[in-house]
Amino acid sequence: MEMKTGLAVAAAIFVFNTAVLKGAVSGQVQNGSKFPKEGLWSVDVMKYTKDVMAHQMSDEEIDQLVSVLKTMNVNCIALSLPMDASEDYPASNRPAPRDAYAATQKWAGAIHRQGLRILWRGAWSGMEGISGFPKLVGPARFPAGTAASAATDGNSTWLSKTYQYIVNHPGFFANGDIWAPMPERTENIFQDSSSFLPDPGDGTNAAYTRFFNDLKTISDAAFAKIDRAVVTGMSTNNYTEVESGWLPQSFFEAPGLVVIDYYGDKHTPEEMDWDLRHMYALRHKAIFLQEWSDYWNGGMSEADRIAYLNRIYSVMQKLVDDGVLVGFNYWGGWSDKAESVLTHDSSGFHVNDHGRLLQKFFKATQSSRSQ
Image (tube, rainbow, N blue to C red; front, top):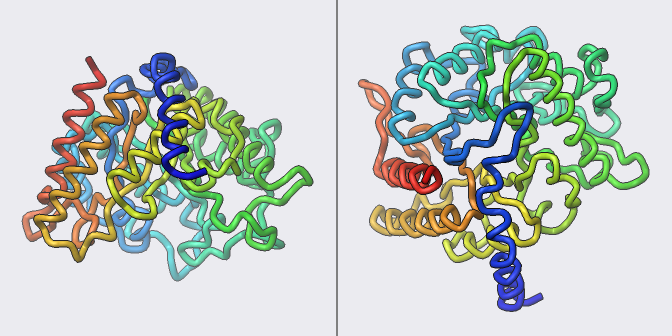
């Protein structure tokens, strides 16, 4: 299908569905919690969490960073922390100076004390092959587990480990948090030798859908056990697997949203607008864009970069106003990178010019959705 024809079809479906879908997300109840009516507007701090477990930030640095991010009009901060216990790490990569779970508790406390939600984007290191863990895929894969036995399987499957992680750490979580673990797990899933899931005979995409539906089921049960109202089923996928149809419509029914990481090919505001509206029309669900930043624009002049970001946020605001976009997590809550929204000096963290544009966008989106 040519883009012009596809755009016309998508636009027609979009107009038909807008009246039905706009505002529906705020009524989507998940484990006693609702996706926030004002939307979810977040910054990711992965470079200061997942990437530095062996040389963590000080308590003072974490507290100051969270305080600065709050000034950006976020209502959430994304934590991409490994879910593994310290004793499971290879000796050369052990978390320090805190134990892995003490580090998680420090971050959780700092964020919750500021009245913010946490977008939990945690990973099992063996599933991703990070921090010196062997990658447990293909012949070395770890059992996926089932929803029926997750509560009693101990740490013998991915699902049971996740259940235990939740019930054993109630202090990590607060009402209104967003549970989105194991992001982008379609990575290398298309060949049996590199997939974390086996093909049971009806296709890897069917197994993948069952796994994440089971993950939502066991997560709901675990959060109910610790009496936390947390929005579950928010694990993100790459745009390509959602747009292509590799993921069936049934994948999106329980979460009630399409949750994607998206960067585009041409990186233009026009492309983003078309792609997200097309996805909305195709899947009949509003979109939570869980990862985007303009990391590729480091060589652009500052004036051109500001103009580009203003156009991007203008597109996003219209998507919010039209009920297409209900959440956005910016991947760049750190300093010294092309995508950074912060600077850092001897006095601590500060919001940079790019961050102030995001700050302005977040303020406008929450205002428009709360009306």
